[in-house]
Image 1 (cartoon, rainbow, N blue to C red):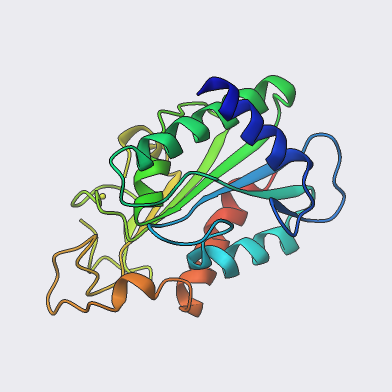
Image 2 (cartoon, one colour):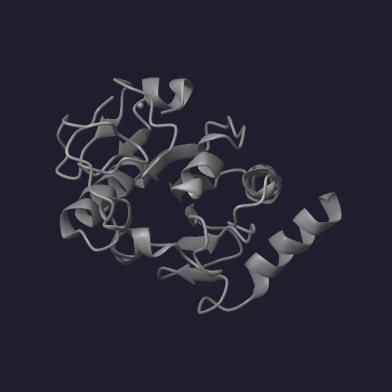
Length: 212
């Protein structure tokens, strides 16, 4: 398991941006920040489409950044989320050994939100966490907003990071996976990536948290 994690880390770091990672301008051996995307159940390997816009805006705005995709299975098997959490934890821990000044932002949709929220990463290097369609969206916790940035679905996030203002936990109005507001909309769970408002909300949060 550990060897597999190191192998995944090596692959993510050396393969070109079109496959494993996308980078902003002025790259070096270490980066100012790393965006780590954990996709949802049954999304294909690669970046989650639910974060495409905000990732691009962030990389285009802040220099010396990189985006890396969590290669976990993202399927319905019992151990899928656990594998993703283990990979994410190892990736950040090993990255900080090599580049201790590097900042991190963790992004997760659906099962990927479970991965990002439950990875056990507690480093101060984590400056931002964005969860969308989070199945464990806990009511009335700091950082909870709807797709407009409002409080209609507020009701979650990890306590430590949330209390530090590092969490943006977005639940689309009608998304029954993360919220209980009526009416329920079966299509809402997949609308984050296509929402200009959600993408701009996420980008603004990432840029604010990672700048400096």
